[in-house]
Length: 337
Image 1 (cartoon, rainbow, N blue to C red):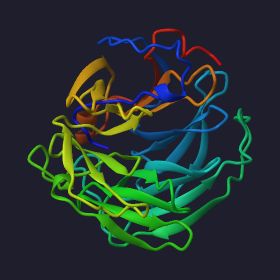
Image 2 (cartoon, rainbow, N blue to C red; image 1 turned 60 degrees about the vertical axis):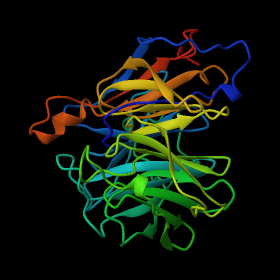
Image 3 (cartoon, rainbow, N blue to C red; image 1 turned 90 degrees about the vertical axis):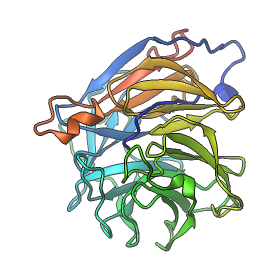
Image 4 (tube, helix red, strand yellow; image 1 turned 90 degrees about the horizontal axis):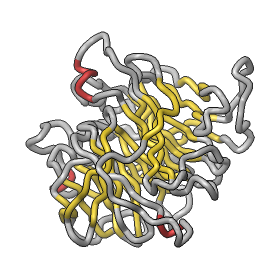
């Protein structure tokens, strides 16, 4: 949510062998949609049909954005009685879980007891909705997490149905949440996830799982870390530092390489085994990233931005978040599909 450095991941395992990643500190980027001033776009998921679902931290909204720019962005849902939406994860085809609650973008402090998980069913939502029409999207509140201070990053447990994990930005822990019965409990509580010297209220932020390892960013301690977990998301060992840089959200390829983004503007690849990173390009406050899921855009990295994290300490905010595509292979992967 409020990282100060960036790293992003590459789905090379799903790509044709002919696609070859090239390191470059100024990769081609394309603006897909610019939101109004003061709109912090926080996270995104990619639907199986290629459309992007974005959460908004500055208002309690989720949008669909068309990466081909053939269809206008569409407001899927406005949540009542909360200030914003944050993490999103897919638990079944076109079934997404979204974290919503009350928090300040000026202080990065959440309100204890205000966070919930809502299930958003997009199985019947059109690829290109008529902007003049309204659509009744099935949305159900599946869990309240009364012990949470600031739910943020979400990921789905791959081996246990209907279970997700969520970081708590302020408490510096990971919650396990059963979206079927609403139960929640802390599954990981480690010193490397706690808020640190960079910012006394910011701890664990983005999370992803790969082969029994939970990777996480902690911009408060200026690290990306990892911790071994079991099938239910409980830690089975101590966390360790992958690379000493901060980060917001990220994605992981099948090789285990990370590509992460953060509020300082960097979009970088993290070489996990070598404990180093390389900057790829800069964007205004990148907040999350995901690769396309189509045959032609699997090498295209989609990135959401806040417009610049530091701007939200002022009112009115003179910038707007956006959605970009980054052609990480420099081979036209971000062209229309």
